[in-house]
Image (cartoon, rainbow, N blue to C red):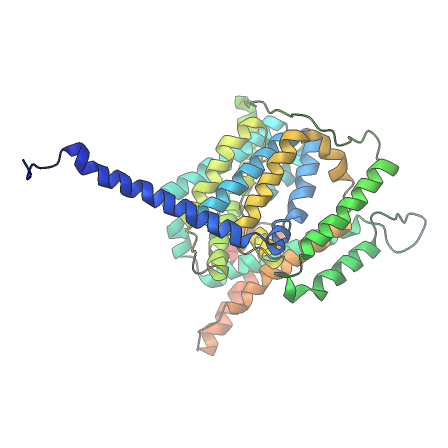
Length: 413
């Protein structure tokens, strides 16, 4: 009969075809975006956050507190997943508070992993329940800008510490590979092309200069017991912390990292992402779940605990990153070097000049701090503008002074 009703299978077929077409269209759109975004500026921008990543990852891997191979592989994987999820150069960086406490207290690899998993479990819970959204909703913008400004100033201090590891001008202790001269030249190069970062791959030029210096130093005047890059296939193994390690890691390191991750890696990051990419807003709930997923998987293999961060996004944006292409490229490179060079890269990373990394980190701080200028946009009342400014400065000052985002947050409120 010509008017026979369609069967359930026939009726569902158009829906299935429609879903398949949606996926095809999305894949084509992403491929076009990848092709159009593949330029030197994106590659340069992907290297913008190395000033934060390399020193922390190297320090923890040399002491056996994280596995360098796993950190590279999972760091690369999360770069790719993050790029595909948010469609912007959302950074993936180490959890700095955990790293600092781990190095100071000589924590075991199991305790470091437990600290990362503990933070991620809490942050992921806040994201899944949308609790973090309410925190963002009721946090004044002046406090958020204060957190960003305080983080920027902290970056400046850490950048100065990196540069001071280099040798000063002249003198008996001067070395050719890591000195103030390299820092000055890097600083001049960055600010000559400061407003041309999309066209001039400044970070890539600096990274290449530093890499050449590191290679020459490693093969001409290597540190004692330095590892040399050796190609092969490097595997990873499961690391299961003991109950004692979990308690120690959570109490000693997680509790200090949780406010930092919630405020800087989620709330302040969402605000910055929406400032830089208003057409691609990033929700706090999605960011929180992303942080949770990274460490509840990667830490079981000895990877360094990762999070996102407003400073890393500012750094990558300043050095030319505008799309997800930048961090997808970075992710592929990390996975490649993790799989085929692995822990043998530790000697090369250790030889990289801190003077250049310090300049890159300093520029990241400037870019992040610059967003504070928009605090009073649209505010007419002089009294309100003054009050907002005082709250922002108070938040930033307490964050820097106490070296704690949570204290800065409470001070601003």
